[in-house]
Length: 226
Image 1 (tube, rainbow, N blue to C red):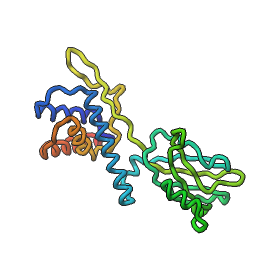
Image 2: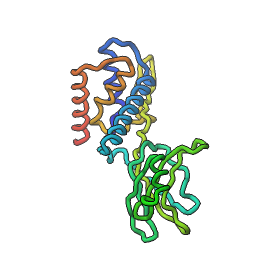
Image 3: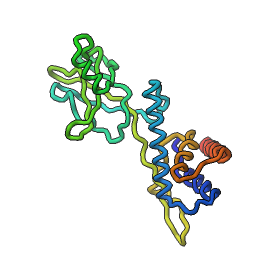
Image 4: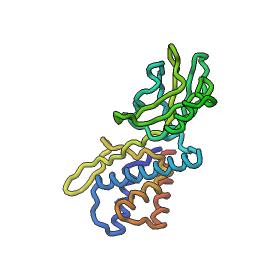
């Protein structure tokens, strides 16, 4: 379940009030939350790159299919929420789907020019790069002499941008679920996102405050299970 944007704002405002930090607009809180989400995603990507382990597949993994011919071995990636490639699959002329490798650009060039490791239907390869025109692109090997191959890129997606929609009356701010977008991360990471957001707002969170975020998560979960 996503982190409810209302819960995040209520908690952050309570910490701001507790620290007597004055008024912070909902828009500024949104900015801090989304920056915190960005930092959290950077940590997830770093862990994946250093350990090869990705523990968030139910949250962030998506697939994109490509039809590749002799003239379309390189094409625009065509994904607006792309963050990091995880793997690639190819279905060749024998209709068997095999997993390949997503290489860095330098590694891809070495493999492409190798007489020993040249990609084929048993060992497909791809790489993602930015073209001279500034277009994020993907290149596949092998490509068919005629007909087409079906490739599937498995990638880590970007979380949706969180938005706290509200109305004002007499100086009071009232949450409006219409137009709001919850934080696109599972609520078990509530305390991590809240801590990062508060850091950007110039407030250090204390251990007792972290405990209260865990209590808020537990209450939300119990409510969902009823």
